[in-house]
Length: 375
Image 1 (spheres, rainbow, N blue to C red):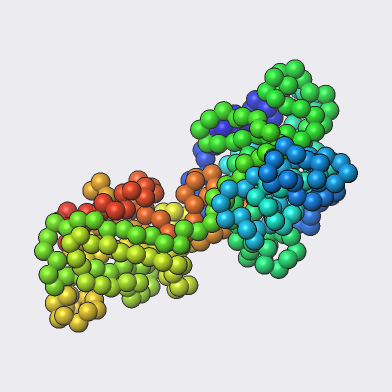
Image 2: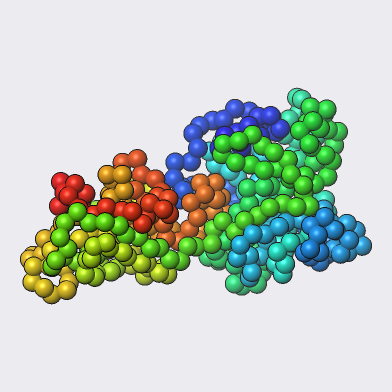
């Protein structure tokens, strides 16, 4: 939250940071009314989409020029864009507070320019009365969702496909010189936010928005062995089997080869999802484990077969996590900030945890010193 913290102090004057960043990507909390339940605000005349070949050409949005424009990167097709109000004073806390959806627009082009108009009075806040009396701001977080019910709102379990880290900001009133030097102008602005860098102002008619929450549907992992695989198989066991929860059969069970490779494709079934306390989320975690198939049955039987080794990266066991696309804006916002994406990903099962780089998934090591048989 470093960049957002800077924004709250320097631009918004919202006070000091009151704590550490959110601990987990699924820790959403109850932080106020969300966009899922609100009606759309006064969006003004949204007009049509812009000229996809020239992001600065706003004449095609109607009789008035466009106020804001978005450039989408990735699989944006079939998504709906929303701008949801964010209480600027909540930026100085651990819990961003979202309000109603201000604008909603189904996407037809990779570049979309809109006439946003003037936000409702209720969205405009005097955020720094001491240094900038009378300066009002309305802050909006852009997001994409799959609008299955066609009402324009992200609700009823609809999945988010993106949350933008460049936000639309409407400024009204007399702008102090110090704010003007930061690039603030009366009307619509755009500001890039990130965890690590200072904020940067961007062109409000060319707001970059990657599709950062679309699920990764396939994961391929494998590597080397340090033992003879003859008579040995590899399986993927649900993390629930290691926590005293439900005992589920393997997601995958196959002969082990040297080198070895596993492919996961598509989302797992519902029973494989569970609350993972260490991660603060509901997800499916699958752990690779080799075993000696003593009875040559082709299935793991804990009464006769011997569990051997897990798969390790840098000496720590790994698992394969399916993180479902979030249906709540708070969760979507947190995942977008972390930059992990959704769908299948490799994770370290060490105490420190963490996500694995894609390159590391092809060089996992299975053998002595890793897992139950390596203890």
